[in-house]
Length: 111
Length: 112
Image (cartoon, rainbow over all chains, first blue to last red; front, side):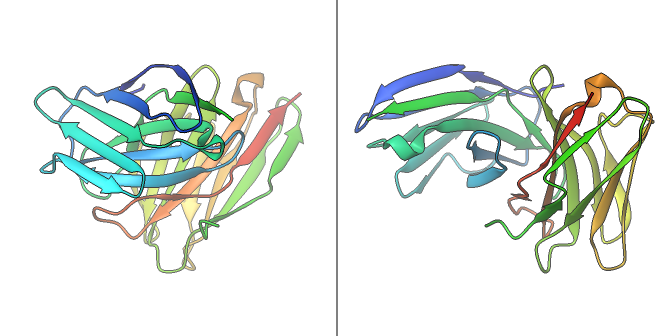
């Protein structure tokens, strides 16, 4: 079963705009990770945020984590057509254990 | 390139058959994870091995089994295949601890 829910399910924006995706989860976690999947391909790890962290940046990516609300958000700034993909959040309940994935957000960036 | 190799990339077979999916983890990674991705179930964790031993089990059917060999490669065996087993099967590996998992490109299994 899915741990989390992602919102929105689909997002369509213009190149240069920012994209924000949200993820909610149900149980206590050790860390939360965001992955990207191009159609029919494997998942690519984007960023990992530990449960004691509130915000993390990596290039054009900004992730926030609110453990009191059991939610996270992924912000992609200055989006590009190449950012078009599905984005998944995944929670890890204990260190080195399974990932439980959300249902994903399909992002389309129009040139 | 994630460094995780999965073979074959595509597999087409019939109901009732048995197949073996293979995964070579990234160099140095001791943990191997198997996931199933389908349209109706999303991404589901199946099973995890760490240095040859089973570490965790998820939504893995009794018809499915896996193992990790001394050289750390892993195989996922699917038997008595049903139409509903058609999916993308991913292998991921990690060093363990608070580390990201690195995914292979998957094996697309089609049951006719």
